[in-house]
Length: 115
View 1: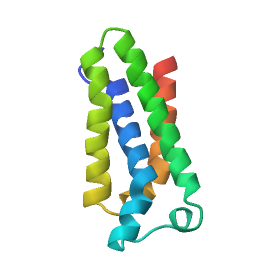
View 2: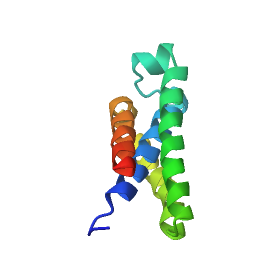
View 3: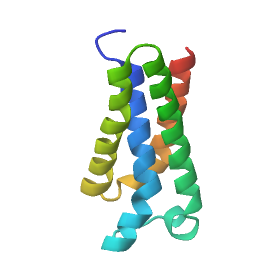
């Protein structure tokens, strides 16, 4: 492990971006925020992509906790939820970029984890 734990950072942002993506439609509909075509016409797709990213980050956290890093493993979902709150709440249209960001970060996490 170096100065910055890249796996931890990737997992936190993948979890948070996935959570933002999966829940954005609920907040956007309630407060009249803009939604992209996927969120409007095919809401199951962003929920599925977001859920898959969250599951992958959760699996990484579980494997990390099993390896002895229990505290940092439990922080992945906590910091991920904080990231989602920031991404969705403050940026509002951040979930649209999460359509690209979440799967990309999940892929990078897989590469990091296997590498």
